[in-house]
Length: 81
Image (cartoon, rainbow, N blue to C red; front, side, top):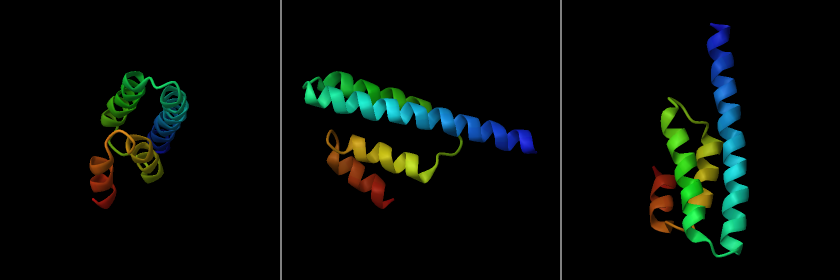
């Protein structure tokens, strides 16, 4: 049973690393006005999040924060639900 917890922890760590890379990429792309590549980075993160059975609340919250400049109404609704 402990190996299952270890696998979940490793996947969560990998997802968190990808989240931080995405935050950096989106921040740089917004400054450079490269909105298409910023959205692409968000889509890559979203695809990886979809593969997981469970996502930590703080990771999802941060994803919504970086999504909000591009889709504010959607991010707001997802925060409520």
